[in-house]
Length: 219
Image (tube, rainbow, N blue to C red; front, side):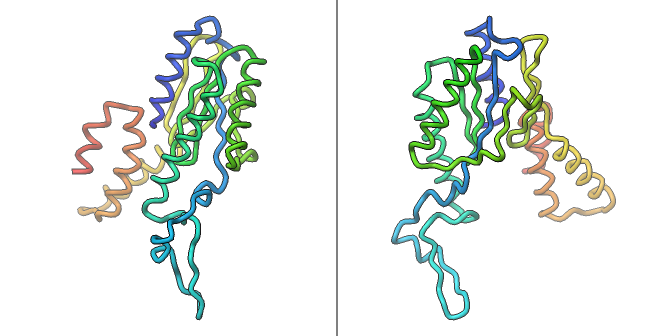
């Protein structure tokens, strides 16, 4: 999912529950999975590919190693299912979740007591399935005016129904620095161009007018 997927889902929630769209009627919770990749075991016939040598010893990973090619796909699909199952314990229209690999963002709408109850249901369901959560890194829009998820910064508007979403300042700064560096030379390396294209893609996911130009970078 992209940042705009979260925005569109939130706007749909606002449309169906109009009286709760201002103030604290909507709430974002970001609560990442802890040690997410290591929740998933490797298959016995794959373990020959998850080995390394240390001195005279050969180490074999019994769990999916972070950085391996298929790990993000396995982790992302499995945890997206976990989030859907956890959200199924909550009344339809009261919650929306989006999960990027191991980083989920959950949106709750309703009165404060309803929000608290539904957050408890979601978190409790995930813990009951045996997964660990990074509570120390949690973000809650009821206490943090702005929250950051993947490449975007979200802010729920207080004075009118709506969501303000912007690209992370760090990404914009890096794009600017990349372009300044490229302009200093007559040529550019493929690796440097890929770095710029990757960062520009993050911007284009929110700013659609960038998409044709970014597409040209990818060839």
